[in-house]
Length: 231
Image (tube, rainbow, N blue to C red; front, side, top):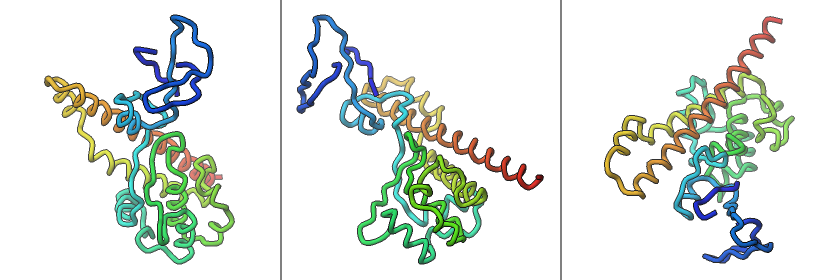
């Protein structure tokens, strides 16, 4: 993702610590643009000291935790979730998703191009479904894809998306309110403090955008289900 700078490098081949090697001839006074890559704001802030507004690659990371997901799904009105006590066949799929076993990778993300990380989405779909045969008709790639609409049925999909929305609500609880942010920025704060505030503002905005997108999907699914029941 090209990021314009005050000192704006086109087409570089290698990056050594603090040295950039150009891959093409650069003419005198030619404006340069450095492409930092498809990174989230955590890396931009920690590695480069700035934040990209409305960064399409920004996301939040959380730990895959059965208790947290039980709480989120309950808050979303989902009955009898299986996150803390999955059935053996569900646990086997979690193992395939590397969310269970001896050395699982429990860090999952919400936001970015995927909107919901595929491993998390597949786990939600599987654990909110009691239809083992229907689940086994789909491969993991389909279960992990948000573009595959409701592979396990509309009710399961609505429950899964509402659980993600509830996770977003829980995540928002750790961010300051708009009033708190405005009050802080009115003070004579340091540049690093202002940057930290902007970082949190962008994270909060990203979470809200994810919630809006998922809410639209839920409403569309419910509408389709209503149309099907009337026909």
